[in-house]
Amino acid sequence: MKLEEKHIAMLVGPGYEDLEFWAVYMRMKEEGAQIDVVGTEAGVEYTSKSGGLTAETDLAAADVDPDDVDAVLVPGGWAPDKIRRDESVLELVREVSEDHKIVGMICHAGLVGISAGIVEGSDATGSRGIKDDLENAGATWVDEPAFRDGNLVWGRVVADIPEYCRVLVDALEKQ
Image 1: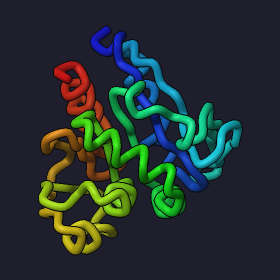
Image 2 (image 1 turned 90 degrees about the vertical axis):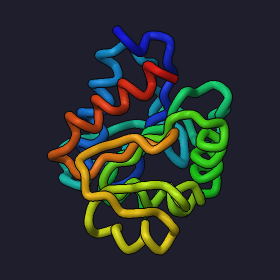
Image 3 (image 1 turned 30 degrees about the vertical axis):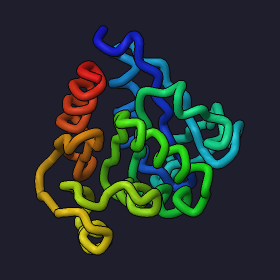
């Protein structure tokens, strides 16, 4: 297990993309990572955008000490557009990024990175639906399944989850 010493905050909110949350969550757990599910409030159960799966938050973003985590992972879906309106979520993402720790974003998750002010000057990918948003925030669009640019790990869409997870595990293992 490559990530036994790693502690990850995994963000969730209403309408999250179930596969981008659960497949990534399970892959990180498989490598031994400790994961806290984090949202705008603790103890809230959110339904995925498909309506088929739920995820319950362990902690509110305001209660997470950025010094205690090695990474923040953000799944896509509709949740990024909702949770980026919460200043505690943005502060957590911003502080983790400023500490040069891993911030993983897939699909629409780049919206959180944009609002946190961490994407300017980076290569970025995600759903084509946020391409203009990323470029307008100062990122350079790259149409690849997954890659790392500094401390940011990017994944494009659901079909790219295996590659995204490989890049995440590699980035966290080397951190």
